[in-house]
Image (cartoon, rainbow, N blue to C red; front, top):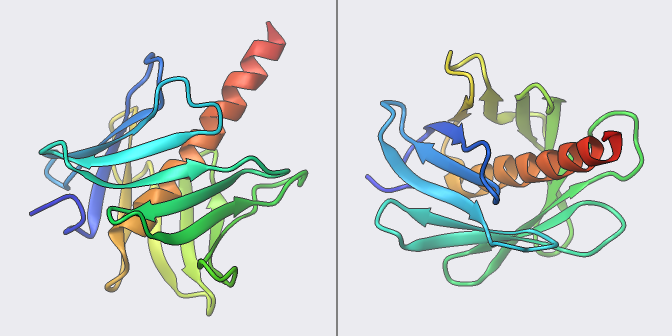
Length: 175
């Protein structure tokens, strides 16, 4: 089975690397693929590859007043845009289709990796949790129903990338 043929994933954050890098595994811990930022990418371009090294899609950061990421599939088709509300007390992320219609919301503790992705009606289509796994730098992603694994993984990766960028900026300003 390929990278996008599962409903449960174990995601390993690679720490102490010059780029944002995640290894995506199946529930048994076997590597399915990777999500890795392009080296020296200011806005943030992250490419997804399967375990054969084939590109399956990407996330492209956009210059805007708020964190915004365009999700592009393997055919270079824009399938969605992930956005975060700017200057709020708590995290507020959502996903729009290419026409700009809000189709998903992210609810929960994003910093603690305990959140849900809900559709417009409030139906939970995926859950992200560190509780699914006891390993320190891993977290689980469970997709419910027959929802797009690439879209869910893109949301998780984009949010993680932005949080790492914010954490790095905060650490740099504190020193």
